[in-house]
Amino acid sequence: MHQHSFITPLIAGVLSAVGIVGPASAANSGTTDTTFTENARSTAAAVVDAGDPLSITVPAAASLGSAAPGGTITASVGAVQVTQSGIITQGWTASVTSTSFITGTGTPAQTIPNVDVSYWSGIATATTGLILSRFTPGQATAANAQSLSTSRTAYSLSGVGLVANSATWNPTLIVHLPAGALAGTYTGTLTHSVL
Image 1 (cartoon, rainbow, N blue to C red):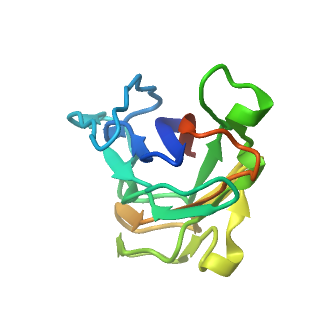
Image 2 (cartoon, rainbow, N blue to C red):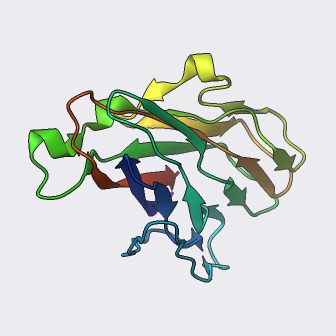
């Protein structure tokens, strides 16, 4: 079974605009180099691997907002979707990781560690397929949010399906800004993978 990944560059800010930027993609793996300007968004066309039975797509862009040092930014990332084709399908697991967020030269005062970045998937906004099992969110509510200091399960499907299936969710990131963080635009990378 192939592993499929999509890496989304993230941008967070202290006393500045914040956003997540990266094109939608559905492929085995892919990275996207993007740039960010305050109060602007970057978008790109989707890349689709139609011949692969399992793929994941992520949003092209989203805005996280801003906060002062010591504050918290909470914002949705946008729709993430796993699609599995085939007549008889197996379960899958989507995972998510994040790097730390960095501005300037990345000194300790210019770094928001990924331990301070939390994720919760929420319940599915849409599902398809005749499933002999169930879709399960990695973190159903905000109370279940998990730090992205390590890989986390974002969503999963267990068991066997009778037809193609898909699940879509709109995850939320929570970024806790250290009190000693310097003002600036912070960037990092969010990676969703499915296998």
